[in-house]
Amino acid sequence: MTALTTTNVAQQGMPLPLGSTDPNQYLTFVLGGEVFALGILAVKEIIEYHSLTVVPMMPDCVRGVINLRGAVVPVMDLLARFGRPSSEVSKRTCIVIVEVRMAEQDSQVIGVIVDAVNEVLDIAAADIEPAPAFGARIRTDFIQGMGKVKGKFVILLNADHVLSLDEIAQLAQPSMLPGSPALN
Image (cartoon, one colour):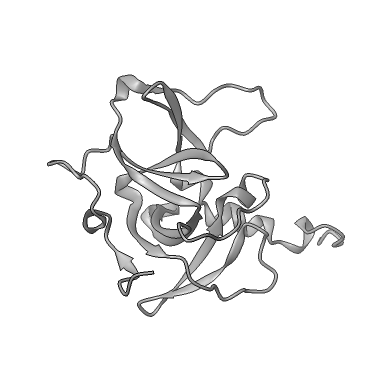
């Protein structure tokens, strides 16, 4: 690939109109053949996919960690988080670095593996439908809404919920792992 492995979204050659802090701007990307989006304000940068350091006893959705300018950044596989098989790594696979809000105004930087980054889109509030209601047993808190773009839906993810490290940490608890005895 290129010698430059990290780029800011604005340097990626993607159209960022004036007023780029508009919360109706979304970075779109492909995961498992579906188009998803994250609010642009949560996206810090996009980096080329490279090998990860695997950390033992992590849930399946945490693929490992990377060293990002001296900081240890956990990297999540959203397909695994959604209960689907992971995609194969290709030339277009990259890691989107996202900052998520944690409790009490703390924030955490997390990497998200995506099959390909598409573009930054302006999606008007009028073109965003609420998350579908599937019933009480199906979680929709990961979905901020369904954006209508060119006659198709883009799934707008709620980064703070889908990337919640508190919830992911619960997945790694011994009592939650298959075959592990419950702790008292």
